[in-house]
Image 1 (cartoon, rainbow, N blue to C red):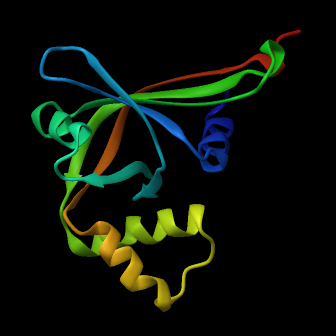
Image 2 (image 1 turned 120 degrees about the vertical axis):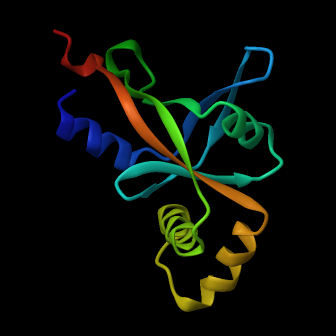
Length: 141
């Protein structure tokens, strides 16, 4: 995919597989909702979750978004990079609002208490991408 196609695909994607490294070197892979913070893929998760503990120990993360049912329709993007833990309340709220709008609909101030409660005892992890891989089998002739 071109850079523009990758950006469009990420914007339309709803669920990603997020991979972090456990303490024993095995891979912890989970399905996650995500949003965008400063142009980067970002997630929020409970501070005591396995993925949060993994990222605090080793900030390496790989995410994959995919689409398609049949072989000739398959397309996807893999992003590999390093996570920055964001603890600034304003940026955390910005991500919370972005995720709310992506999955629930337009934001209003009535949603603020819901988002604030969601962000309680959580961390925000922003992915700084070092490598991107993409594929689009619809382009195969």
